[in-house]
Image 1 (cartoon, rainbow, N blue to C red):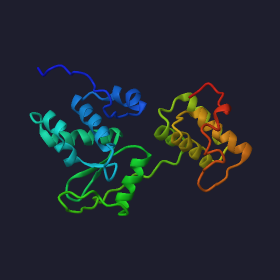
Image 2: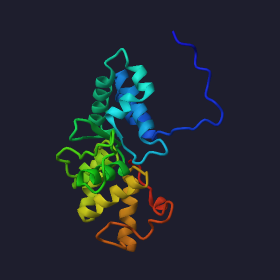
Image 3: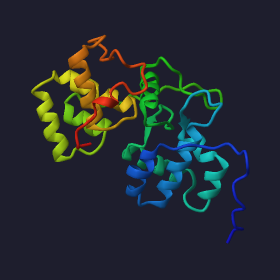
Image 4: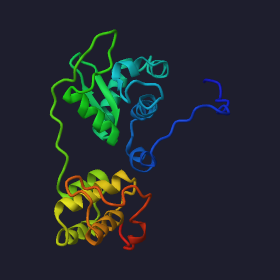
Length: 234
């Protein structure tokens, strides 16, 4: 048994994780190896000083903590399996590369944009041993466009109360407005139907500054819709 941990050093650099990880992801992970690799990946990908907020699977597996952790338990193949599991779970975006490696991103708005730029060829994959490589040819699933599906992707589980509220909103607002409002709420880290509905009410009252982008006149304010949130469902 290894010696007891002596405690965190004062002034040591801290890493942060979204609260959603603890409330929505952690309870669902049953494989201890997947949990270890997922936590390490979330830390390693977002470390300061990286040329891109992404990391090759092989590079991650070679990092000393993971290499030591899995030295007697499958090594790099176990790390790769766990990264693929994190990708299937939706925590990471795992992009296959032509050389058989994979490029891993945190699954958030920034990660999606980076992944899409790599696929499009407008951003180079970080070189390994001086060799440039492209993303493998893959099909990226289109973003959902139906309000209920967008809610599940951007906000969370669709409850009967929220489904009924969305159906009612579809009778009052264009479908595109509802989709944009849900994505706006997600961008603001205010993931609730009440917040999205407040955005819709404001657009209905004050209009939208840019119909094509879905941006609203109050985007620069911290919480321009807060005073409109009043209903009892999430």
